[in-house]
Length: 180
Image 1 (spheres, rainbow, N blue to C red):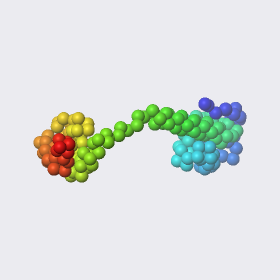
Image 2 (cartoon, rainbow, N blue to C red; image 1 turned 180 degrees about the horizontal axis):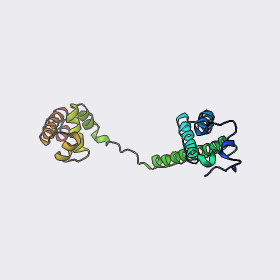
Image 3 (tube, helix red, strand yellow; image 1 turned 120 degrees about the horizontal axis):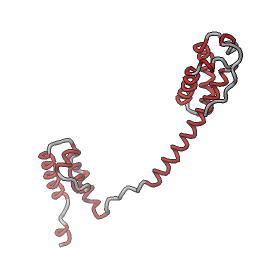
Image 4 (cartoon, one colour; image 1 turned 45 degrees about the vertical axis):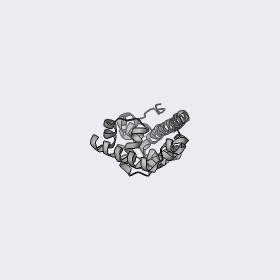
Protein backbone atom coordinates (compact mmCIF):
# COMPACT_ATOMS: atom_id res chain seq x y z
CA UNK A 1 0.00 0.00 0.00
CA UNK A 2 2.16 2.82 -1.20
CA UNK A 3 1.22 6.31 -0.16
CA UNK A 4 -0.17 8.55 -2.88
CA UNK A 5 2.71 10.61 -4.09
CA UNK A 6 2.64 14.36 -4.45
CA UNK A 7 4.55 15.35 -7.59
CA UNK A 8 7.88 17.04 -6.88
CA UNK A 9 8.26 20.70 -7.71
CA UNK A 10 11.31 22.87 -8.31
CA UNK A 11 14.80 21.77 -7.39
CA UNK A 12 15.92 20.09 -4.15
CA UNK A 13 16.88 23.28 -2.30
CA UNK A 14 13.38 24.72 -2.78
CA UNK A 15 11.56 21.63 -1.47
CA UNK A 16 9.98 20.97 1.92
CA UNK A 17 9.13 24.62 2.60
CA UNK A 18 10.18 25.71 6.07
CA UNK A 19 12.41 22.64 6.47
CA UNK A 20 15.78 23.64 5.05
CA UNK A 21 17.86 21.20 7.13
CA UNK A 22 17.28 18.01 5.15
CA UNK A 23 16.03 14.72 6.48
CA UNK A 24 17.34 15.14 10.03
CA UNK A 25 15.50 18.42 10.46
CA UNK A 26 12.38 16.95 8.82
CA UNK A 27 12.48 13.96 11.19
CA UNK A 28 12.84 16.11 14.30
CA UNK A 29 10.10 18.45 13.14
CA UNK A 30 7.55 15.77 12.19
CA UNK A 31 8.25 12.77 14.45
CA UNK A 32 6.03 13.67 17.41
CA UNK A 33 3.00 14.38 15.23
CA UNK A 34 3.41 11.13 13.30
CA UNK A 35 3.69 9.11 16.53
CA UNK A 36 0.57 10.80 17.91
CA UNK A 37 -1.33 10.04 14.70
CA UNK A 38 -0.22 6.39 14.75
CA UNK A 39 -1.15 6.14 18.44
CA UNK A 40 -4.61 7.56 17.79
CA UNK A 41 -5.15 5.02 15.02
CA UNK A 42 -3.56 1.94 16.61
CA UNK A 43 -4.30 2.48 20.31
CA UNK A 44 -0.85 1.15 21.20
CA UNK A 45 1.93 3.56 22.22
CA UNK A 46 4.84 1.18 21.55
CA UNK A 47 3.24 0.08 18.31
CA UNK A 48 2.76 3.72 17.32
CA UNK A 49 6.46 4.41 17.80
CA UNK A 50 7.29 1.36 15.65
CA UNK A 51 4.87 2.56 12.96
CA UNK A 52 6.39 6.05 12.97
CA UNK A 53 9.91 4.66 12.79
CA UNK A 54 8.94 2.46 9.83
CA UNK A 55 7.28 5.39 8.05
CA UNK A 56 10.36 7.58 8.56
CA UNK A 57 12.63 4.75 7.48
CA UNK A 58 10.73 4.51 4.22
CA UNK A 59 10.98 8.27 3.78
CA UNK A 60 14.71 8.17 4.48
CA UNK A 61 15.32 5.36 2.01
CA UNK A 62 13.64 7.39 -0.71
CA UNK A 63 14.54 10.87 0.55
CA UNK A 64 15.85 11.95 -2.86
CA UNK A 65 12.26 11.78 -4.10
CA UNK A 66 10.22 12.34 -0.91
CA UNK A 67 12.34 15.32 0.17
CA UNK A 68 11.35 17.13 -3.02
CA UNK A 69 7.62 16.86 -2.40
CA UNK A 70 5.85 20.05 -1.44
CA UNK A 71 4.56 18.33 1.73
CA UNK A 72 6.84 15.43 2.73
CA UNK A 73 5.10 15.41 6.13
CA UNK A 74 1.85 14.50 4.38
CA UNK A 75 3.62 11.63 2.61
CA UNK A 76 5.10 10.20 5.82
CA UNK A 77 1.71 10.54 7.57
CA UNK A 78 0.04 8.67 4.73
CA UNK A 79 2.55 5.86 5.11
CA UNK A 80 1.95 5.83 8.88
CA UNK A 81 -1.84 5.70 8.34
CA UNK A 82 -1.43 2.71 6.02
CA UNK A 83 0.92 0.96 8.46
CA UNK A 84 -1.45 1.59 11.38
CA UNK A 85 -4.37 0.22 9.38
CA UNK A 86 -2.35 -2.88 8.53
CA UNK A 87 -1.33 -3.34 12.17
CA UNK A 88 -4.93 -3.13 13.38
CA UNK A 89 -6.03 -5.62 10.71
CA UNK A 90 -3.22 -7.96 11.67
CA UNK A 91 -4.21 -7.81 15.37
CA UNK A 92 -7.83 -8.58 14.47
CA UNK A 93 -6.80 -11.53 12.34
CA UNK A 94 -4.53 -12.82 15.10
CA UNK A 95 -7.37 -12.49 17.63
CA UNK A 96 -9.74 -14.43 15.36
CA UNK A 97 -7.19 -17.18 14.80
CA UNK A 98 -6.51 -17.46 18.52
CA UNK A 99 -10.25 -17.57 19.26
CA UNK A 100 -10.67 -20.41 16.74
CA UNK A 101 -7.68 -22.21 18.18
CA UNK A 102 -8.97 -22.03 21.74
CA UNK A 103 -12.47 -23.05 20.65
CA UNK A 104 -11.07 -26.22 19.06
CA UNK A 105 -8.77 -27.17 21.91
CA UNK A 106 -10.09 -30.32 23.56
CA UNK A 107 -11.15 -30.00 27.15
CA UNK A 108 -8.70 -31.36 29.67
CA UNK A 109 -9.52 -34.88 30.72
CA UNK A 110 -10.80 -35.29 34.22
CA UNK A 111 -9.18 -37.80 36.48
CA UNK A 112 -11.55 -40.73 37.04
CA UNK A 113 -13.72 -40.26 40.12
CA UNK A 114 -12.93 -43.82 41.18
CA UNK A 115 -9.25 -42.83 41.51
CA UNK A 116 -9.82 -39.65 43.52
CA UNK A 117 -8.49 -41.20 46.75
CA UNK A 118 -5.44 -42.56 44.93
CA UNK A 119 -4.53 -39.19 43.37
CA UNK A 120 -5.15 -37.38 46.65
CA UNK A 121 -2.69 -39.81 48.28
CA UNK A 122 -0.20 -39.27 45.42
CA UNK A 123 -0.37 -35.51 45.97
CA UNK A 124 0.44 -36.05 49.66
CA UNK A 125 3.74 -37.79 48.80
CA UNK A 126 7.02 -35.88 48.77
CA UNK A 127 7.33 -33.86 45.57
CA UNK A 128 9.73 -36.09 43.60
CA UNK A 129 7.94 -39.29 44.62
CA UNK A 130 4.61 -37.79 43.55
CA UNK A 131 6.10 -36.70 40.21
CA UNK A 132 7.60 -40.13 39.52
CA UNK A 133 4.39 -41.96 40.45
CA UNK A 134 2.20 -39.62 38.39
CA UNK A 135 4.45 -39.90 35.33
CA UNK A 136 4.52 -43.68 35.65
CA UNK A 137 0.81 -44.33 36.27
CA UNK A 138 -0.81 -41.40 34.49
CA UNK A 139 1.53 -40.97 31.53
CA UNK A 140 2.64 -44.63 31.42
CA UNK A 141 6.27 -43.55 31.09
CA UNK A 142 9.16 -45.96 31.51
CA UNK A 143 11.79 -45.47 34.19
CA UNK A 144 14.21 -44.14 31.53
CA UNK A 145 11.62 -41.63 30.25
CA UNK A 146 10.80 -40.47 33.78
CA UNK A 147 14.53 -39.99 34.43
CA UNK A 148 14.76 -37.76 31.33
CA UNK A 149 11.70 -35.72 32.36
CA UNK A 150 12.87 -35.25 35.94
CA UNK A 151 16.54 -34.82 35.02
CA UNK A 152 17.83 -37.52 37.35
CA UNK A 153 19.36 -41.01 37.20
CA UNK A 154 17.23 -44.08 36.50
CA UNK A 155 18.24 -45.50 39.89
CA UNK A 156 16.84 -42.38 41.55
CA UNK A 157 13.54 -42.83 39.70
CA UNK A 158 13.37 -46.47 40.80
CA UNK A 159 13.95 -45.38 44.40
CA UNK A 160 11.23 -42.70 44.16
CA UNK A 161 8.77 -45.20 42.66
CA UNK A 162 9.58 -47.82 45.30
CA UNK A 163 9.22 -45.51 48.30
CA UNK A 164 6.16 -43.84 46.73
CA UNK A 165 4.44 -47.19 46.21
CA UNK A 166 5.22 -48.24 49.77
CA UNK A 167 3.76 -45.02 51.15
CA UNK A 168 0.66 -45.39 48.96
CA UNK A 169 0.19 -49.00 50.12
CA UNK A 170 0.21 -47.83 53.75
CA UNK A 171 -2.23 -44.98 53.06
CA UNK A 172 -4.67 -46.80 50.78
CA UNK A 173 -6.48 -49.99 51.76
CA UNK A 174 -6.35 -52.80 49.21
CA UNK A 175 -9.54 -53.25 47.21
CA UNK A 176 -9.85 -56.90 48.32
CA UNK A 177 -9.56 -55.85 51.97
CA UNK A 178 -12.16 -53.10 51.48
CA UNK A 179 -14.63 -55.55 49.91
CA UNK A 180 -14.16 -58.23 52.61
